[in-house]
Image (cartoon, rainbow, N blue to C red; front, side):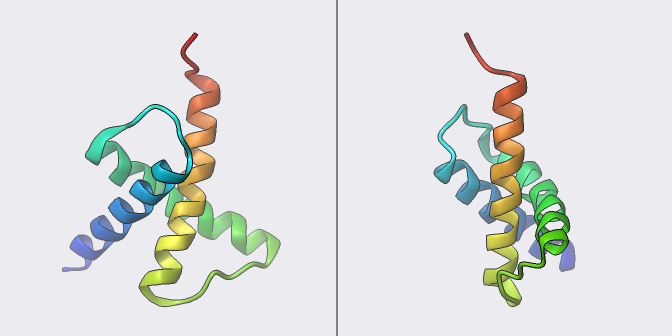
Length: 82
């Protein structure tokens, strides 16, 4: 059951990040991957600067979306269409 929750939070975080950052769409699977990896990046980066976006589902989704924004920014820098 925990893996389902992780996938759901990752999908929501990736979707939210892709809605905020207007770039090339990655699709459902791409949003899930970006959201899950973004959660790790978000927790690490926000922990380094001492910021906490809350606890529970909402905090996890916001932290994942923050990390997803960073990942989407880097992806668009690396693979910019000309």
